Image 1 (cartoon, rainbow, N blue to C red):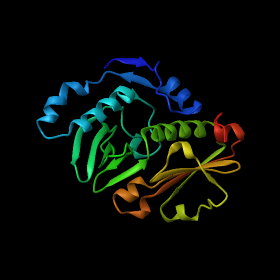
Image 2 (tube, one colour; image 1 turned 180 degrees about the vertical axis):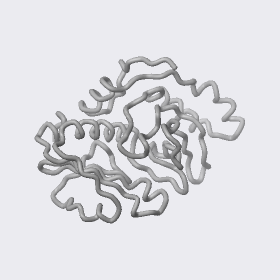
Image 3 (cartoon, rainbow, N blue to C red; image 1 turned 135 degrees about the vertical axis):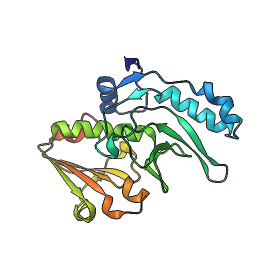
Image 4 (cartoon, rainbow, N blue to C red; image 1 turned 45 degrees about the horizontal axis):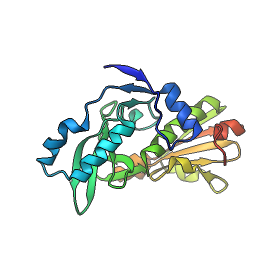
Length: 220
């Protein structure tokens, strides 16, 4: 497997995320979507879906980032594959292979969402950019927090988020980030929603943050 530095960071990311991808991301060789286009067409995958996969690959293909705090690290690297769905419900495709043996696939949804698919489709972030922003923020917060507290199950409901504001750049759906006066809270509900198991929720509280730790150069 050939590894290269990321010199062409996708646009649409915050300064914090661009810096994260540049400093910690690498590119690996992946096979072109075009190599499989006819094979998928022969199996009634719509042309528009294959075009979406090709666009995804052009923008994100081969990007390997540090592991996420949850989901056993997330996809190893971005590499679109395995389109599935139908015209009435929409089409999904695989975002990349798992790093470990988790009981779900990482998928891109009909509207471009990033999520997991097993018993049901569960979008974690509204866009791939949101997933990348969440990785960047977790990496940043873990380096600046004076304390990191893990909360699981029903205890997540006891975190008082009334005085917090949502971190909008992560484009959170099942997974959300919240910013307070001196702390960040990441709430991971994806696995709980995917498997109908509320006690599977997890939250990480990064506390003791100064202004830089809270935002990492991203303006309000």
